[in-house]
Amino acid sequence: MVFLPSGIFAPLAASQDRHRALGWAGRACALRCYNPRMRSVVQHLAWVVAMIYAAVPVFWVLIHPLVDFWRRQKRSPYWVLLPAQGTTIALGLVLTWPWHREMVYDTPYAWIAAVPFIGAAMFIFRRLRPHFTNQQMVGRNELAPDRFEQRPVTTGLHGRIRHPIYLAHFLMLTGWTVGSGLLVCYAMVGFSLVAGTIMITLEERELEHRFGDQWREYKRRVPAFLPRRPQPPEPGSSEVPRAL
Image: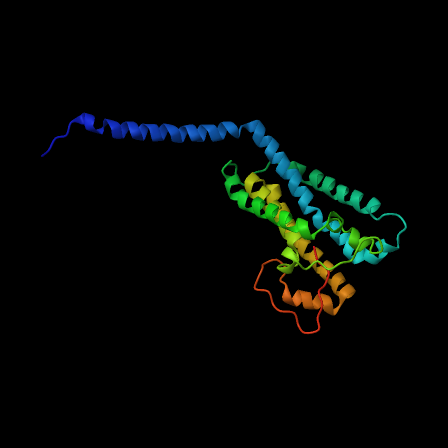
């Protein structure tokens, strides 16, 4: 039997102690950076962000089925649409207030999983800028066609998916939900799926009514959310205006 001097293991033990100390220091730093006050601010911010993004479908549901009505009005429709949007957000905050602190889980490391969703949403918004104007973002082209150009937008991301903006909104909402762990945010994700489906159905119905075969051809070639290999247009077809 070979006996080794006890001191030979001292460097190994010291190394393990250093790694253990660094691990605890990292955990302590994370917890210190994510202190209760900061956590409360982030949770409240996530709650408000969720209400804002969840209210997006309400804005467009008021526009697309009633686009002819809004165009006939002498006053700007935003005198009604913007207060309605603000009221929807405020009502959502009031209704969810009793549960706005309820957590599905509570860990700062959840924001690591949230980064891909938020990053993807920011990437989409950035890629849209060269092909999409602020007027189009808020629906002014639909509401005032005599004042704003009704040009087709099928380049960039709109050439790959029909609704890149709605996809970016949903990814941003999902990112804040995953990071915050708030029960209310998860409920808003479910609400957005239902309300978004209704919104897109009404929007595409209005676009098909307005553009006819052009829209049907675009819809045949370009998927709604998940990109696929582009299909060539049918002979004699033309490009169509964008969907959001």
